[in-house]
Image (cartoon, rainbow, N blue to C red; front, top):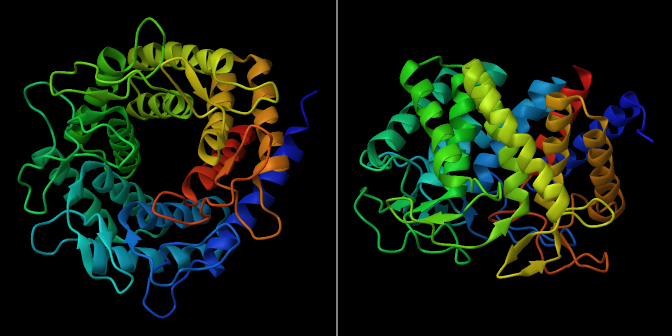
Length: 396
């Protein structure tokens, strides 16, 4: 039985307020500026943890988006704090682009230029511009777009390479994280360049940007998505030779709605129809292959072995993916699946004692307390965005 849509919106809005309250109180570094780089599962802050570009850009996006949804002034104040810190410390004033990592005082400690980080900076900056019209934020986002196109775009084979050195020279190790394959191209980076480009296009109707978005969509349809399985391939050589066999269920269902969002923003009806068909197929495959009996989403499968832990972010993305499939097809089954995922989140992932969501739940339903509440990758972006997206879509 589908819960009343008005009730669903209400509980999602309450959870959004609770999440943003956590980040707006516990995560703010009043002494050194910006936001703390690490908070453990019990809410204990490590004030000397390094500060990453991804966490800070996602914080900027989250508070800006939360303000755009609710118009609560305290969210805009937090967004302004995040923007000022990024503009003052993460932007490389000499070589351009965004540093990967700073120490707790704001000094660069890893100056590599990851395409993924440039993209997330655009995502946060463009959402902040949408929130308050800050022209400096839009200018920085535009500059980062040109930086990506100039330095990371592969004009021979299409798509974008992973990483470069601080001065834009070649790097032997291009990995986004230690768990990733050291290959020059990845699904993950392309997804998170598409996502910010789409958001930037909402406030800057540049034809070159539009063409870049279209090219990335085609890369997904023609290169990244396996036509036989409807799963994303994850890593590639320069010429798009596939270099991995991992299936990431969270990325599959996240990508389904981000691709549809991008095609819709371009207002290309033929492309949107093609994308929507594939997006629904990807959701169906996730539902059939990557879903537990309670509706929650497994992490990934490799060489026939499935990691059955339930990470926080695939659950958040599944809610949006299912709701988008419902909007596309009108099939209420997808709305039922979205509710199942929300019920899992509500029962297992939300930490009502120490705040935010647990990072991971094991197969027995127990939180893995060694995971952080805030860290280099653990952030308010996946869960706050899912709540905002679901509420906006249910209100249509």
